[in-house]
Length: 367
Image (cartoon, rainbow, N blue to C red; front, side):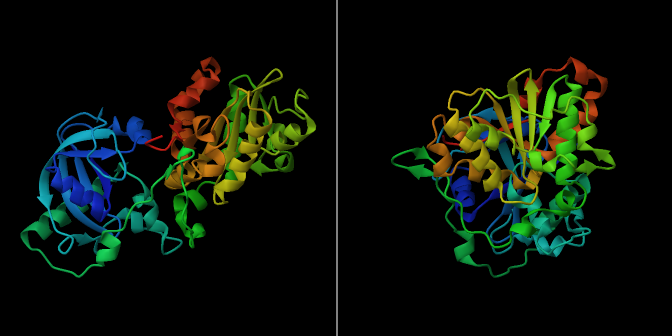
């Protein structure tokens, strides 16, 4: 059975894709692990982000591969697939996503009017099979019976952000945001809590045979009736091999895994708060201890991936030595929970490094 995946385009990248023959599509380097799930015979449903419309169906003709040939002007998108055009619309005849809201599960049980947009913040992403078939059918129907609709050309041709600095190379300069609270979908805000993720990380570290630490101001918290202080191997004090300033920073990090006096991993859980605050703690740690060997992780809802990567690549963090984007990785909530559910009793045989199999590099794609 074929699966359906989201393929995001701006008007500019769509036109560039068509100009090059519409036979190769591409994604960011950090999506390589996910892209390996996509197989020949699956379908990409192409979505124009500026005008929120579905414009085409592509059939996958290859496994994913890496190619650095320039196809798009502003970004590389090196994770490539050979594809074949199945149905193609124009910006005028493309299917507005809002016309499908009664057929797509992403519009079910919304707690805020913008919550559905979380699915369209990064690609490739897997559609629910019924959603994918509904979009496929709508594009097929629009090909046979096109309906022209006006669209905003400025939004269609909007220019993607670039990340270049003559002094320090690839960086991110985030745009101003006005709907921070709406960026998180109900799946993140209602079904998963900050405390749940903290608890899972603490318990996982303990089950791995490591000592664990929870942020000093979170020690009295609990999840589902389980107090953080009741977790085996929870440390009440930190090793004192660092100076006072470093220790004051470390003790406020959400979760630490330790082996003896060595800190093995540090986690900042960024649920609905500004990601910048957790990164500041990590950057302070690197600034004060540039030779420290710690695995750093941002753990956040799946739909905040682009936000995490963008913040990690701010100039203030990429100027560190070493740069934060080379030390810090992103773990999506779904990957963490799925991994914990699947490991079962194997957990006692695993090493902390297994996290790097589910964590995503935070390097900008052309860094």
